[in-house]
Image 1 (spheres, rainbow, N blue to C red):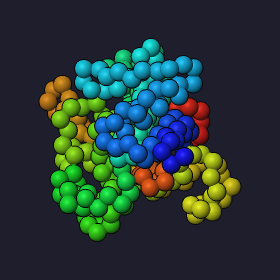
Image 2 (tube, rainbow, N blue to C red):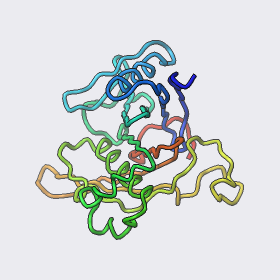
Image 3 (cartoon, rainbow, N blue to C red):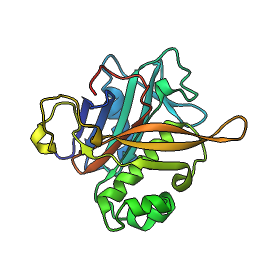
Image 4 (cartoon, rainbow, N blue to C red):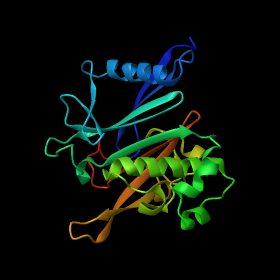
Length: 240
């Protein structure tokens, strides 16, 4: 039925688990979000799960040592998960558990009016001002990188620098190569599908350095989904 919620758990090319909730068309606003979150909580592999938040706002699962990251927009709720890392304090940044996810409607033209606020001058030259999908992609990159960096107060335009835009790849590691113009017999996705972002970090001696994160983006129906993660983070298997 069109009013039912749809739950989908799937692996992604980088080896990060993503769970998506869509549907529930008769609901809207905060009620839709709360119900979608409930659908996620009820679909735990072992048992019901409960989402909590640290004092810095980062989400976690009660009784679990795995890093999660959440995103939601109108009609779409998703949670990205890394394997359990009991050696890591999830309240703090660690390359082993650095992860962010963001999603947005691929046709959300409103981002064109905001691009001057979240893109630097160099990034505005990189991305056509009239290309809605590319600007939406850039917005999801900035949001996902903010979550992965674990640094409050970052400025999107000046502190988060896109050094390479990702291509929109397949949502799962199992795909028809011809749909993505991939040649050859290798199972791994070509490097051009991955992007990169650099986040400015203020060190203890008050000097600036950068954290480099990897990007992977895909289309899920009408939504662009972006994963931002440290190359050294824990992953599910060796997919790519």
